Length: 351
Ligand SMILES: Nc1ncnc2c1ncn2[C@@H]1O[C@H](COP(=O)(O)OP(=O)(O)OP(=O)(O)O)[C@@H](O)[C@H]1O
Ligand SMILES: [Mg+2]
Image 1: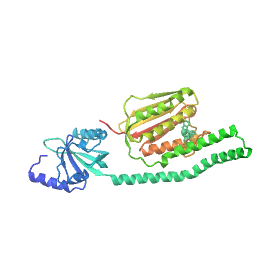
Image 2 (image 1 turned 60 degrees about the horizontal axis):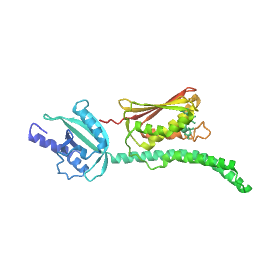
Image 3 (image 1 turned 30 degrees about the vertical axis):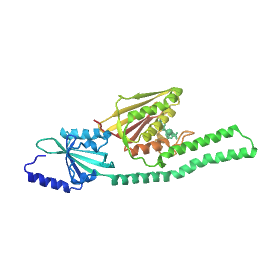
Image 4 (image 1 turned 135 degrees about the vertical axis):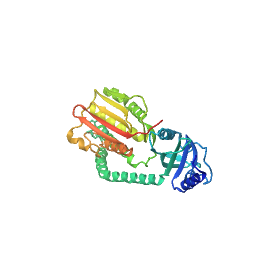
């Protein structure tokens, strides 16, 4: 760093050394200055010089495109300040979730960028416990419904078993009913597993296009059997968001299953992936029965179903997962014409 006089530079260093937040100054990818807090955060001795070390030493390679994109914007003066959230790893390999603010650092000789790094582990923990308690409250609300939904099949299973006990004969019809009721309980419990699994909020960068493709493969043979055409309308590009692949797959499984069920045979399901400046969007459109106006407000309520063997949990789980991914769901529908679900997720910028 050049400065007008050595004493100004000395005062300046003393000043940023006293700042609580970790500060790194970069020239390109290379650290040219680190304050004491940065050394502490990265588990170095306060007096060790990190000068010359590449920033990539502390950042996951998958997150480097995020940093590069922001550094480029700042260096080209396209933006004055940028902010990214990611995990860094310290020299003793501890992962620390951080929020990094990037600023242009004025210097006569070279293009420098200042990174102010804030450890957000405490905030993350607080957020996770909030999400956990939100889940618990959903479970609380659901309990009454679950008891009701599971007690009914159990009563009928018990009744038919008792009947066979009395007659001392196996009855195939009774066995079929028992099997159906058990499958119904199984469906309810597997849908609700999402709420009981330990929170996996360690979201990573995932490609929606990849997840949608894998989900479509699951339905391929079913769609052929039903004479339903599934069309993926995508430019083949990646659509990155921060998320959990298994949970997101569940979202698409639930929506495509509903679309197939609404079509009753010959029809089309179109899945379209698009990007805007800030969002990755997925549209799932079917040419099915459409949703009657009078039940529109019930969508996403637990146990609301118009199907004989539906649990009425599919959309509720879908909405909850999308919300946990900071996304939104909008539905448009026309009776006898079809339904479209519009999903939108905050985008992760790469490159
Ligand atoms: N694409 C769609 N077209 C028409 N109606 C739909 C569509 N998606 C959802 N619905 C309506 O919303 C209701 C609730 O859907 P949800 O997925 O929550 O439960 P379900 O499909 O009935 O049961 P499950 O998902 O357990 O099989 C459905 O019963 C149906 O009436
Ligand atoms: Mg469903």
